[in-house]
Image (cartoon, rainbow, N blue to C red; front, side):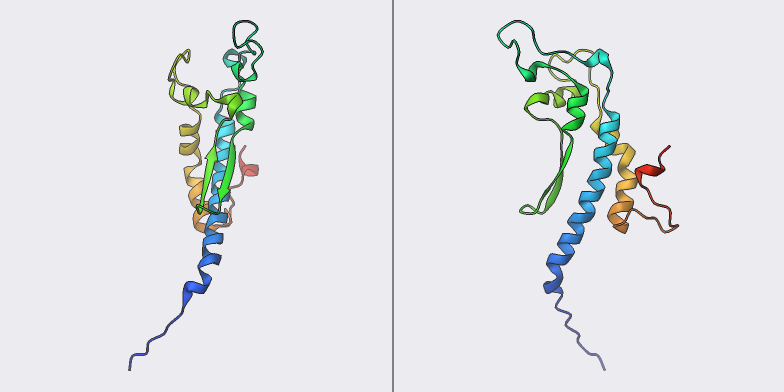
Length: 147
């Protein structure tokens, strides 16, 4: 004799959604750290604020990889139910030119985000699947283990 069971899981939807967003946020944190590490932080790519011309003294005319690294941030949007990684702000509007080599970017592209995605893909997958960053063998994938 078959019996019908009605679990009514709808009441747990918010908890499942919150747990999923928490995992996504932790996974994006892994990507954020890799992106910061991948940015070229050499003095050859730096440029001070313009000293003359119509844009003299404007902060957004400088090119500083340290400032760019500080703008990489993970943003959780509960209203849209997603987690995003943002790079750049008005001071570092040139992040796209750096990644793809568009415009007058000298020396071609200096990609940092695409290699960061490739480098952190497996760690992100572990975080998304386990929620804790722990594998079945018990070894974590935290940054403290990277030598």
